[in-house]
Structure formats: C-alpha cells, structure tokens
Image 1 (tube, rainbow, N blue to C red):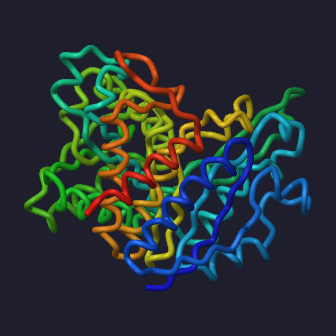
Image 2 (cartoon, rainbow, N blue to C red):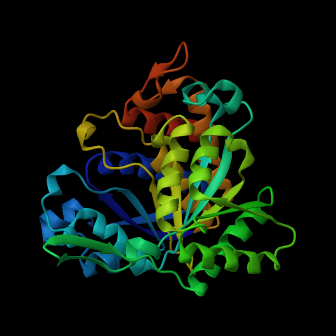
Image 3 (cartoon, rainbow, N blue to C red):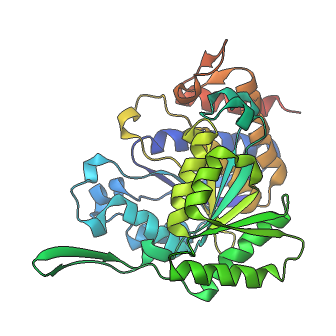
Length: 362
C-alpha cells in the first residue's frame, strides 16, 4: 500500500521526535511491503521565521493533499513577543479548522512497566488506568470571538464560548461510538450548573443516548471530573467533553500515567486524513540534547496506521515493540525514576531500540 504523509517537524524537540517516528514507519513499510512517502510542511515558529506566518496556505495545502499528517510540536519563548494572532499556536488552530478535524482522541493508559512512575498511590494505580478523552476540537471558546476594549477607563477582555446542537451531536456520536468499541461506558463532562453551552451540551448528549441503549451514559461536572481523575481513574472508560475542558483534563490525565512524553493523540473529522501528534509541547529547554522521549510520537504514528490507514497489525507491532523495550528496562530521562536496573537511552537510541524490536518480531 502506498501512502503520502505530510510531516510537520515543528519547533523545539519536534524535529528530533518526528525523526524517530519516521524511522519506525520506514521499518514497518519494509516489513509489510508498504511505501510511505513524506512531504515536509512548515508550521509554528519555524514557519513564522521562514514566511512571517504560523501556517501559510501553501503549507496547509500540503497537509490537505496528503493521506495524513504527523506533527511534532510547535511554539517556544522565542516567539512570545509576536502579536497574538500570529503566535505559533495559531497554526494549530488553523490546521485543525482547515482539515476539519473536530474530534481529538487522547488515550490515558498506564503501561504496566511504568506503574511506579505514576504520581498516584500504588493502590490507585493497581485498579488500572485505561481511558480515552474525546475532545471537541474546532469549537468553543478557542474558536469564539476574542476582543479587548476600553470601558470606563479600563481595559476589558471578552472570549466567547459558542456551540451549536450539530457541533455537539457530531462529537457526541464519536464518544458513543468509541465507547461501543471499548467497555460501553461514556462520561459526558460539562459545567451545566453555570454555563448555557453546557446545558445545551447535556441535553444533546441525553437525546443521543436514546440511540445508544447499549452504552451507559453518565454526566459529570468538569471540576468533579478533574478530582475524580486523580482519585479514582479506573471508573472511566470514555470521556467526551468540549474544547477547553478537554484541553485541561487530557493534560492532567497524561501525568497520572507516568509521563506526558508517552501519550499520543489523533484528530479526525469526517474523512480519514487525520492529524497525529504527541500531546506534549516543544520543550525548547532540552531541544538538540538528544534526551527527549519520542515514544508519544511513535505511538501517534501507530494511531495513524490504525485509524487513517486501516493497518491494525502494523499498529500492533509498534505498540508491542514499545512494550518490549520498556520491559527490557530502557528509559528516556523523563521516565527513569521509580525502578531498579533501568538503562538510560537517548532520543535516537530509543527510536533504534523500537525499530530493532519490530525487526525481531516474527
């Protein structure tokens, strides 16, 4: 099978971790007789430096013309002084909107080899951490009107949170369908005791629930959910929520699994051209030092194979290889604590170890 992948290396550690994911994809291609071709696209700070724009249309067009997109990370203090509408993160919002990827799926799963690295008590971790946050990605306050103006001699700012029934319904269906493929439990998270958008969200979710009688739907206020994720994460299977709440909760969920460097994500819309990226940032303080953890990006590539390319066996190989390397005691700096006999690996070495593990599989 032949697939074209748009590659956004981005800023900070982005180029390093993406390189390791591409090495893994090349090993998979050779093993299974596929051909992956790569087209580089600039986004974020590097695009600002090159074009004066965090995502020029010609770079977005490269992504739209590919079968899927692999992204490293964007942003950094170098671009803190640029105008708000031109910050590197604006490239992320543009590519999500441009590709129409409205569903961001972030698994929060603790690898048994990293159980001791979780900041939670062992008795909580032992119950299991394995859930997915389905986050609405191109609506809500991040895409509402933002303005600052003078009123009564002082500055006032407004950020508008807006959702329509159709926007809620389409992400709600993703939540229900995802739950159907797992343990058939869906938790809808909102703030309906305060926000009109959340009251609409809740009503749409309950209407949808009538179409999914096999899925157990529960409601939870976002502040309670934030507490429950650290108190009893085993209760969750699939969480579906709006954009800003999902942004915050998914970062919290990543940390209880031991390291944010381990977590992949997929963003999909109506088609199969998805955006795949680790959930961590560009970490400019360690860029170029070959110590970043590439596993989140490698696992994002595995999600690409599974969800965009319909290559489940190939994705399984990558995930199994990551497990094998961790079981052998290899760790990057962010996951070195919490065990004896661990062996240190740099970014490129971790990529090589995963590639070797795939090659060794029968």
